[in-house]
Length: 343
Image 1 (cartoon, rainbow, N blue to C red):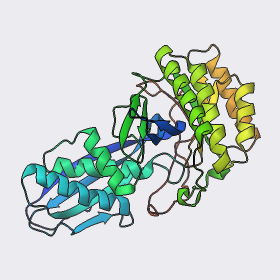
Image 2: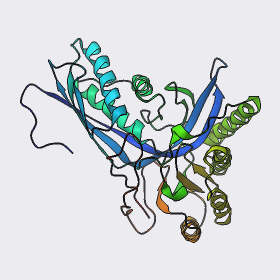
Image 3: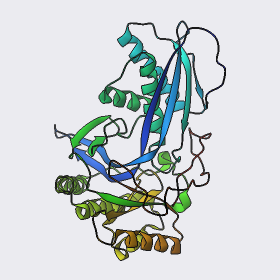
Image 4: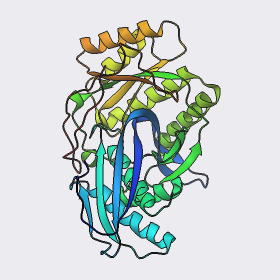
């Protein structure tokens, strides 16, 4: 990733990292504290793949003289420029250019927050090069400016309802999700989803009522640690998402979940990644997961990895996950090696 030799001269180097997620538990339109309608989502966190960034600041160069490797990461380049302006002002220094290097293993186009992870890692690397650590709210503001909408990957992992187009938290749902085991898979053959090509459907009053009801149920599920109730919310949200995504395997996925004793399913509302959700405290979990894997295979649905919502991620089947093959890339990330650890 990083060249062995760099141009001579005064430099100040910073590094940054950001995680990914596994799609959404809930996504829709909700009311904020002032009663205004906002697009919002609750993501399913996943440890493992992430984006790393290194920024080398070049004092004395023009602020627009920022180069990015790989060169196609245009959103990260925009984030770097915005972060330089923010951090230079805070540090009382003139803004300058620099070089940004990015690396990561988040599959592209599956709805796992690859572009947001790039952007957040970039902002953190630029801030680090100035000796600064920006607050999550500031990182979110810069991320939205860089890519118009972002996932809440800059936060501490608590379940939140996040207004992705505004970069702000609508509600902290609780300290942690109920303990879940997630068997990940990909729908649509794992092909990337072009979110800009998806039809846009405006939410009406009935939609808003349904979303707010699911929000209330999810709040209760988090407060009581009720994995089954969370699964019901995630499944209902995923089914609504099918109105736009129309994954042909979705009905089979829900049937599999019922047959193997899962609490529900979740999908990425802007991608092809999905998960079968199990109560991690349920008896016979290993047998249920193995039955799920056999059923997914029988239906031609590729399984990817199993993970938990615990702080410490533990693979439960045959040791560590194996690396999968390259996946197709999407716009703005054509040079990323897209790999998802597989069971």
